[in-house]
Length: 215
Image (cartoon, rainbow, N blue to C red; front, side, top):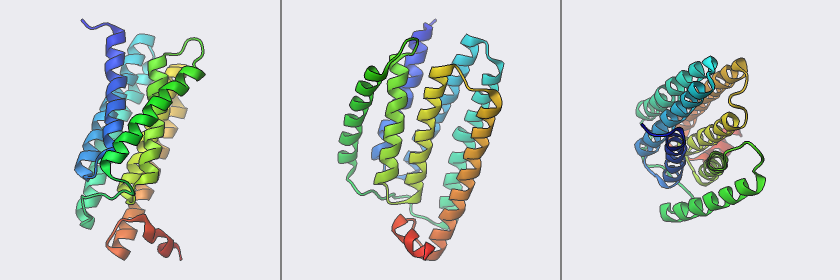
């Protein structure tokens, strides 16, 4: 049977790999599929901590992560794209190869920052992965022209913060975690409403049109 350290490395390593691959993906189905895998790994990570620390409330959190992030949110993304007729080809300000290179450099920088900021009792790998996910999510957020890509960037950032919170404390209080989950869902629903409005007005999801929409 694999040791806990190997299982942990597989889960957090998988989350980092999916985040790095998402940076260069220009097809919605591919981006959503990678996020779905990342969410499943995140749920399993929370489950692993719940079992090791005997924290019952984290079992509920792990289930909610998988239900909301691995099932509901990806399904809604694809549903909105299908019903609005939006293009599944996403847009970015940089080429995919350039984004991959920048992403790799940022991951290296994140691990160096994690090493400098490491304090007693924390796992270097987990802290490095959480920093990397936040930075890669920010990269997605600022380099994508479309609302789908930017939304995915925000979700990857949130996943990184979630990983860091679990590593740091072994889980925040139950009602705080539940509140964050439903705040995230409410924000996602509002974002999808904005997607519908922008596409209905301009037949495009490029955020350049948002300035005109506000005016």
